[in-house]
Image (cartoon, rainbow, N blue to C red; front, side, top):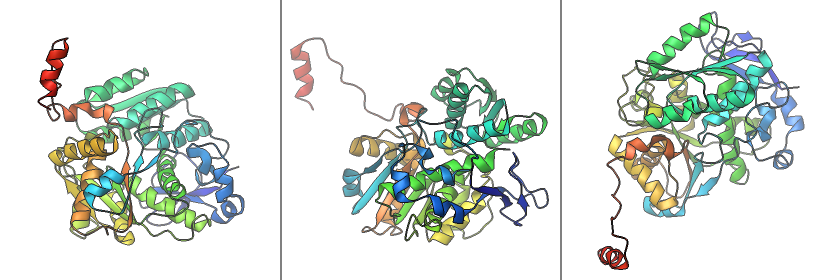
Length: 409
């Protein structure tokens, strides 16, 4: 038996039953899952959580499912790395990387949200799952959907990186490449979702799907010894991840897991797709859609569905937003790799580079505990580094040739 009491509109507060719906029929506001926190508080403690398997379902009472988890049993509980080498370069005392490049079946945080979405799709009785994606979600729905026995329709921008396309096709979904950017793909998927009885994880299953992102916040708090950090830097595409990480800390406090939970939340975006950061800097709630033009394709959502709510969280938490150029993104990837041995995709390059700017500009205190969210593995976006890294040293197959090179290094 789950602890979800229903869905509620984030705008007008109207309540709905637990169904595959995502928008209020009265004001068209987005719907969000509502829990019985008092009931959860009676059955969950630090001790009960610590005694469970190290995956995202160790927090299952705060996930929107009715029965036992059915998908993603090997996802989650990724490392929280103390980044001592990077901290020295940034001049800060305590810096951590929440490393979602590893320990997931498809090597990105999307395995968290898909685990929840497909478990919910099973509960609702769907036989087909689908999504609009910039890459990582496509991989995750393709992989988890295959194991769970779903028919799968995956819609992507036709300009997506070749490595990301192959990484979906290997699971043999129905992969549909659409001429246009992610926002074009998403609009098309909304039309398809209205006609076909499919579980679109980021449309009609979106309220449940989005809850999976909270597990990043839950894990960070647990891995810090049941404490919230002072600062969290989050990459923003739709803005949903940022809002859910914030929600995670608040929920842990609500059910008595944390004594205090007041981290500052910072939004990180690429300069070529920065509608959320622009709104934050302009101190406005108005999100002005833009046409994305950035190497960080996984963040290239010009009309972010949760942009307004992300701005509100940043303001409420006392955080800020910052953007970086494509060159700074690439340098962020390389810096993280050579200091901490973590190969992040472009979104990770964004958060690393943005963190550096936030520290330099004084938005982050150098004596505070800071966590950088790195959400996907760099093997997925190698194209971004082509021509931006050193060439190998070529030698002949003899010792003299090697030593000739060695003397120059």
